[in-house]
Length: 292
Image (cartoon, rainbow, N blue to C red; front, side, top):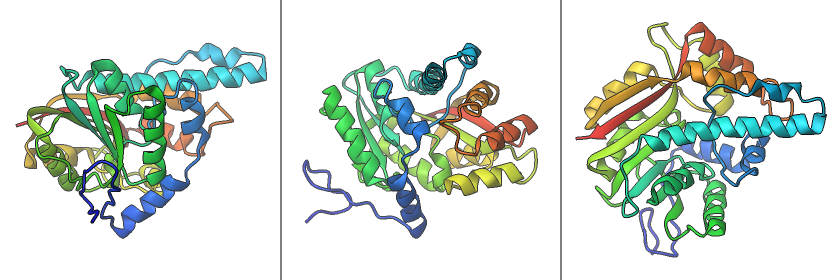
């Protein structure tokens, strides 16, 4: 009999999901957004997050419309991959014998990035069967499917072995879950001294309640953005001790500014992000923590 937590090869793992999580799964099973797919086609690294770093604004001066489109797409992909590399750089030191856990893996780019950097094994989980199947096919094409695997599972209740992972992360996926439940599962999965990293959008509770812009972002992505302070409270309750905190807000603005000018990729939420970042009500934060 196949259960929700059966990890034997060849068997399907079916996560237990709430009504809300089913809605999230439906959203990502139906998603075919060019801002995710067109960027990933450049090098078969499909990221489901935003970018950081100074943009090459010269792409906007390209007179040929086809080349301008291609250069814009490539530049946005460079910025989003820079974000993935930053997160991966905080996971180490890791070896090829270590395994890492990618919570909310999307189409799998983060796990591949970690594997390419360290040679480590990786398990990614997503509520979307479509994303898991896509990511596993990409791993097979790269010839790394023996090391990097993706699973249709609930990140709050994975069924994976306790203490099996040297590092774990969420990349822009914490806003879909309750933080205490999430961090309890990461603390269970990580070995003592293991490293947890999250890069996330959070609302700045020194500003007050969630701003109008934050509410619009919630509605756009069917998520529930948490206040900044709750990350630290929930980590302290679940044996995760922050060792590095970095505000990436200013480094994220060029990505959104450039994306707002890419007519073939805009989704309508770009100006909302820019307004929220600039008025201080929304922050892009990286937290690195050790499991004690």
